[in-house]
Image (cartoon, rainbow, N blue to C red):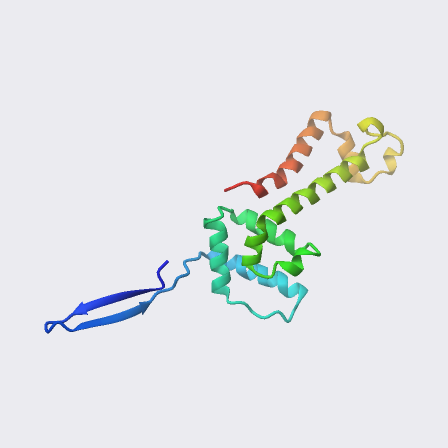
Amino acid sequence: MKRGTNTKITTENNTEITTNKKTSCHKFETCDMEHAKLLFQFILETNSEHKEPNFEKWANEFRLIRERDKKTNQQIVYLLEWSQNHSFWKKNILSPSKLRKQWDRLVIEAKEEHEVKKNEQIRKHSGSHGRFAKEGYEKLPEPTRKWRELTDKEREESQQEYENNIEWLGEDA
């Protein structure tokens, strides 16, 4: 990317005049600035005295995440939210460059966390041999009763939809 443009002008008596016009090296979009401001808002929730960043540099870094790393806005926002709600990562992702650097590690951890929660949910709702227990059915919370009332096909479709919610995270746009 060019930071400036040199222009040479030759006059009638062969005198050269050189001008240096500065041009912006940042060509981010509105969504990139929105991501920068979102990250800063998350950081302020943890540390209200955090120094205000150079939002143009941050927006440009989000542009790089989108364009060079081929990540979608949906992936960026998801990982921003996930990292800033994680006790370890919210202390370590304090700039878009750190988000970009740690992207693959964050995706792996988010998927692992999702898998653990999914397995806990399955164990919680299943009885012996993977079958749903019928004892105490009336005492179960409403969502659990509704889950048990689903047909096997409906339950399978619901589980597949649940699993697909995180699958896109590691995929290229």
